[in-house]
Amino acid sequence: MSKPPIRVAVTGAAGQIGYALLFRIASGQMFGPDQPVALNLIEIEPGLKPLQGVVMELDDCAFPLLTEVVQTSDLAEGFKGVNWALLVGSVPRKAGMERADLLGINGKIFVGQGKAINDNAAKDVRILVVGNPCNTNCLIAKEHAPDIPADRWFAMTRLDENRAKTQLAQKAGVPVSEVTNLCVWGNHSPSMYPDFYTAKIGGKSAAEVIGDEAWLKETFLPKVGKRGAEIIGARGASSAASAANAVVDTVVALTTPTAPGSFTSVCVLSNGEYGVPEGIITSLPIRTDGNKWEVVKGIQLNEFSKEKIAASNAELTEEKKVAFEALQG
Ligand code: NAD
Ligand code: LMR
Image (cartoon, helix red, strand yellow):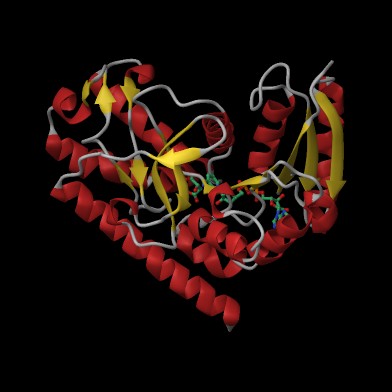
């Protein structure tokens, strides 16, 4: 007998990331080759017509695992009974903007979505926020969903982790699979800290294998931190396929047991781990049994790492203040 479907809401389903993401969910790449899925696709009114076209294409793929597709601009209908809510829909930045500049535009979207998830989603719902600035948007949605436990809320830094791994692999001249234990700490913004001191290449310290701290500090860090802007500059639009890929990677990482000694980067609500201020959604090293997750303990951070992490988290504390003042005003 086949399993009951996992119901997945995707907001902004007719957008760039949506177009790269839906087919991967429906084909089984997110939840596995024997797990049926139902898609609840949420768009604003002007997005509903293009969404029809995307749904025609989903139909035309004849995915055996796809049991149902709901198309709606009604949040209650869209989040009804969902086990996962992937909050992508929002405005992307343009060249010359920082992601935080989107707070005033996108922040309020997450108030209504938080409430609708609270009132309509399945009891086991987990939420991944992608729309920028994703950390603070996630906090806004969480604050408006009082019935949903805090450990169900995630924002995405897996794209930054993947970017950082590739940069290190290319510098070291090794396959990217050799790079492990790469934690991105802090905000999904240029202040993020991809921790090259903790990372490993072929099981050895990445910093020692690279052997060039000046390159790591002065080239690698800004390269990863500003990669999103670099892509906007080249493509004229923000990253989409790689972002969708990171959404798949994040959900897979949170729903399958983490390999021993390893971890993944996800933004979660801080409880003060590693001296991070409590009450912000910040990127931390996470491991899981596929259901319950925990922040990995015992990572030794040197002064340089501590300063970088503190600076990124100070930025998040300020973003939180600005966002919540704006929502009240
Ligand atoms: P896009 O403009 O191509 O698509 C966004 C879609 O969202 C549009 O179809 C739009 O109609 C829809 N939308 C807007 N407001 C909505 C709402 N209130 N409810 C439902 N749908 C709504 O943008 P995109 O390239 O798909 O990017 C989406 C977001 O993801 C942006 O905020 C972007 O900055 C962010 N992003 C985050 C990461 C990350 O790593 N966290 C990576 C890439 C992009
Ligand atoms: C990215 O990192 O590519 C996204 O957050 C989009 C952006 O604005 O940089």
